[in-house]
Length: 366
Image (cartoon, rainbow, N blue to C red; front, top):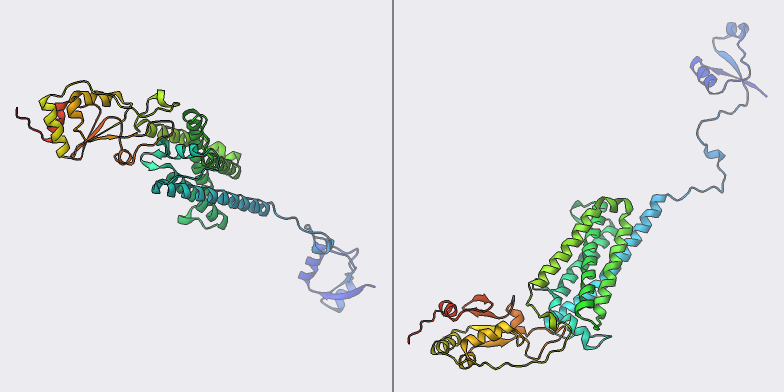
C-alpha cells in the first residue's frame, strides 16, 4: 500500500535522481491546499554502482593477499639462511681454535690427510688463518639474515639493500670455495678433507638461496658487479698464495724425506770471522733442505763457517703435500728461501758476504 509523505524541495530532487517512481502526484489541488509537495512512494530499491555487503553470500571469504604469502616465504628463506650460516659459524669457530692453538683436527674420514690440508700453507691468506676469515664471513651472513627476518636492519638499511649485501657476501664465499676445491683437487690429489667439503656445500647453498631471494630481475641489474666480486676474490687468493714461500712444483705430489748436502768448499778466514760475528749478533738464516739457493749461500761461507751460522731448517722432517713449516719459520712471515734476519732487517735470497758484513756491522781485520 502506498503512503504519502511530506518532502521539502531539496529532498524531492535527491530522491528523484536516485530512483524515480512510476508516477508523481503533483495536482493543482494539492498545491493550493499546502505549500508542501505530496509524493507517492513506491517500494523501489536504489541500486549502487559498487558491490553491497547485503548481496554477499555468507559462505564467501576474502582471498589471502599475495603480499602476505610472499612475506611469509621470504621470512622462511631468511631463517633457513641464518641456520646454514650458524652451522658454518660453528665449524669455522672449531677450526679457528685448532689453528690458533696449533692442535690437530678430528677427521671423520681420511685420517691424517685432513690435517695435512688444514695445516698447509694454503690454510693461510695474507698471514691470516683461513678458518678465521670464514668465521667472520659466516658470522656476517648469520647476523644479517636474522636481522632481515626480524625487520630490524641497522643504520637504516632497507630490506632490498640488505638482500643485495647478502648476495655480494655469499658470491665471494662461493667463489672462494670453488677456488679451494680446485686447489684441493690439484695440489692434494688423493687427499680428503671433510671440513673443506662441508664448508663448500654451505657456501654454495647460501649463494643459491640468495639468488632465489633477490629474484631474476634484480640479479640482471647487478650481474656485472657479482662477476667483479668473484674475480676480485679469486685474484686476491692467487696473489696471496703466490707470495707465500715457494715449493718446487716437483714436490707437489711426492713424499720427500729430509736429507743433508755436504758443503765441499773450504772456508776463508773472512768467512769464518763473519760467521762468528753473525752468530754473536743473533743473525738467523731461514731455509729448506731442498732449496738450491740455500745450498749456494752455505757454499759462500764454506764447510767450516757454515756450521757456525744460526741456520733454521723450515722442514726438518721432510716434505710432502700439506706439510707445514716449523713455527719459527711461520712466525717469521717468510717470502722465500733463503731469508736472513739481521738486527731486525730482512734480506731475501742469496746475499754476498760483503753485504752481510755491512748490514751486521762487521769490520774484518786481517
